[in-house]
Image (cartoon, rainbow, N blue to C red; front, side, top):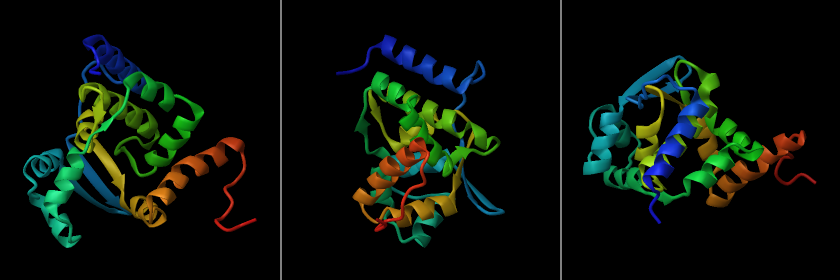
Length: 194
């Protein structure tokens, strides 16, 4: 079922209202990789090229080569779509559990100038990305909908998550159990603890 124009308008207004964005909407122009004092900026255009052609260019192409990643495979992943209903996702992201998950992701991905705006920026990018993608969200749709010019990616935090997520079940556990522990007011027990 394709969302109607009204659904898109409502979703866009919701996302913008949640982010308290200025009257003009801006989209991410650069992804800034941050590791301590080291920062490298990759234009979104390089991600667009990779997604549309399967060929890495510029710094993104260099990083793919250094990481021994197949550009065609990464390009396909950037275009991979997940069907999500805008109203349900919007409501979910505004629950305590949704906020807890967004809080965890905002440690990794956030606006470069205001880390505190990470949760609203993520919420906005997800809701707008789904609305603009006719009920589907891809990594490229998320990047196109991210509401600030620069999106920071905390590389050490991302690598830490990747280590914890040796499998899909570990990743699901990370995002489902740990945020719930924070809501209960108890620290998460180490794996294998009784």
